[in-house]
Length: 199
Image (cartoon, rainbow, N blue to C red; front, side, top):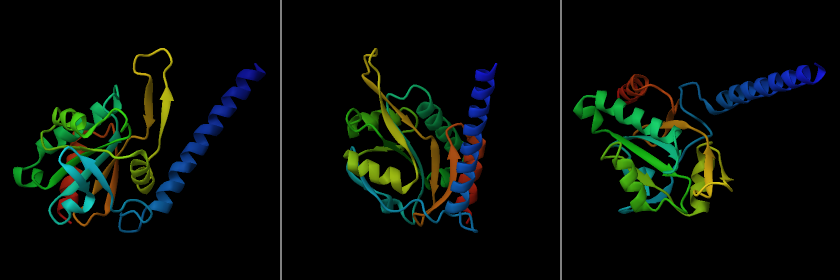
């Protein structure tokens, strides 16, 4: 009984710390106007047509960015599907101002061509980008994401990638303005896009 009680108290403590961590993250990152002080910024990675910079879309498109990998079994497909469905809800002139971007955390397997084929399944206008590990790690750090490689000894995959699952909404000035999550509904994503375009 004592072990069960101790285990329960431990789990409650972990949950409390996680909640506090989230609260602190939000307090430190968010400015009064809803933008994020310590997250985001310019970067350069590689797509199937060459170098891709965040600033390539400045003034023309807002960017919905997600970190993941093409062998992801659930979180990544759900996120990309929901973003694609959200964009379909927009008026054509609004949809033209949105760029979906998938940043691979698995450059060893996810070449630019593989990424291009993968993201086009969800939306033909999405782009997939990656880079060297150091380049990817820099962008991960800039946006407050996390990931780790998990070895799978009994799997043909060899390894998987555990990763955070935020959607990053970046406005036409290149500033991060909103965080959504992999299970955010298409309606919620569409509303966030429309509100950002209206600013």
